[in-house]
Length: 499
Length: 86
Image (cartoon, rainbow over all chains, first blue to last red; front, side, top):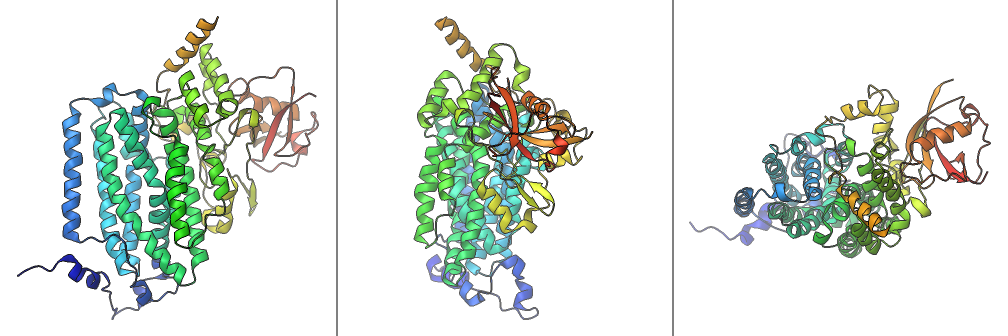
């Protein structure tokens, strides 16, 4: 019997819905899980995902992708690229693997929420594929670094990272819990797929893939490019959900979900991707600066998508555009200075040549962050390493769980957006961070930052050593300068030549 | 006397930091305790200046001998430490 072509049956099957007989529709799709917002099931049946695929097609394509990626890994393994790579690039991979793979499993939970509870049959269908996508991404990114565990225990943080109380892991979990695992199906479609994936995973996966290829790391480039092909498919689930919300009088609610998710995602990518692109990747392998990638992927593309849908740019857009020049430089400095608190070896990325590159890309860098690096560099030149290591904790934002930072040096403008709520003083790194809290304080008020836990006696002994232990960092796991201060010698030579 | 945690936002530095002061500390003592974690680490010393404490983003500095217990700070209050001529 001849099979029908996909086009002949797809629209019928994708709109097929249950007619519950033994339970009510509300019991089948509880509002807190489905997030239908009073919009009838018949309307959700009009949900029309732009990317269509069938299960046989999906399996065939995914099998080919996996085969391609695994064969490149196998072919290049003997060349032992990791042993020859610049230490900054090794740190880039270790940071990525420690932060991302288990987050992919969390994304699988978000997809499962849509696959079960979305009232839109098309959403449920696409999310079933999305759930399998995220499972594939987690397993790939757990398997690839495993080959390097013989080189360093830091590679094991692919499995370990997100399960610890390490500060970056706390920040990542806080974001994923907020926008991926704890929302209703429609909110998840908007916050996870539309905002986080359309807007930001492009940065980590396309941006880093370009840098990886330039660095010669073809295994990593092929891995994350393969993942990105899935992302660009399943990230399209949010668009049709937004169209239905907007057409049914829920535009303001949709806008708020997007605004929260974009800001929170931006902060995480500023700490994760910003330093990797602008400080860790060898300068000759950098395709674009972090700011330029953000401008291309967020400003040029994402902004247009929002406007095309009839939505507005988030109210804080001007703040975000300004902070593209600022936030990640402070995050980089915080990671490097508090390097024992991360599982990778942070690259400083501030040799004279690199500082020239930073000044070119970010005019004014030298009189801002450069002033701080001047003091650090001088200490290292004069054998005062102890002064380049922390003896206390930085102030942490109660929304993003990252250090509160802005411009240091000559243009110093660091601001803590303090807010007292129910007798507790909260600290926020920006107006949008505070805004996220204020629109739903019940959701966020109970969370304790690392500093709150320290002050509250949850970290014992209450010392920096106690904090490192609390974060799960053993002596071999704590970060140190990626190049063992070799970069400082360039300043010493320059100084000697000038004398 | 009691330990009192504050956040020190030190002029020129890139991040505020947790600093434990004492309720009986003078503002000069607070400035010294805050400076320990910033000056000479990430902020260049300014030996010809004095360090003064003020409420976060305030224009007014506290009197140098004023005690922490008289400043009406909330637990974990963020304060600024700035370089001044006097």
